[in-house]
Image (cartoon, rainbow, N blue to C red; front, side, top):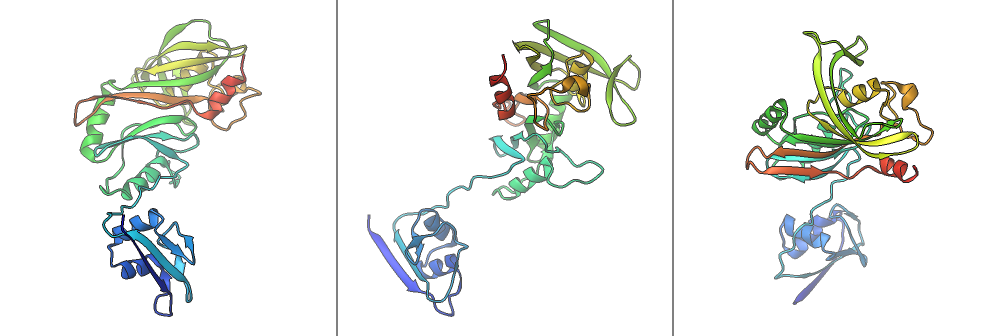
Length: 306
């Protein structure tokens, strides 16, 4: 490997970003310079720098040690966002793991930094410059998998799958009390009250049929870990139906909050997580199965339970 070393001392005409200096000194392209910085080839006064945006001042010694025959490439930056992590992504769609406490979309209050906002910003930094087209939602205090189309046609095809109840949506929940049956289903009609509360009621032209299947994974002294599969996807469906059965999700301040309280569940979130999402890829037709691990809040509660 033939290494080349170049150095220059900054004068009054070179003050500014170090990457500009490196580009002039090495006669390299912008992308090559970014690659050299990421590869530790550039130093200021003997200290290797981490960013090409680092400022140099008069008297600084900028040095480059690199191989002219090597094609230096910028390292892919890890996206750091508290609202989500990326579980799957290709040219057509993206599946993210939403953090609890994050709104999926703005309400009438026009909140900022919703999941749609943050995923849109993430995609705007990609080379494809795609948009985030929402397909379905999760409640604010629920964590887990949410899918977006990167263009309208893909989102439309995915939404149609949801309308036809094709996607397999599986949740994990810790509910209050000990569920007696090993598995079961809820078939009930939901209505919306004036305060947007959902409740179970008799069928009518204004109600929505909600179908939920569950199986018990673990019984504890005063709580139960259940796996929940949605057949329909109505707002607050899991929360309302389990509360109606006197087994509200732990931490739920809206549905049977007096029963949902637990001395060891001290989180602001509720104990509900969208852990698995299965669907047909709208372009390739492949069967997709995306999984998400249980969040630490649920894991810690289970670890301390008997």
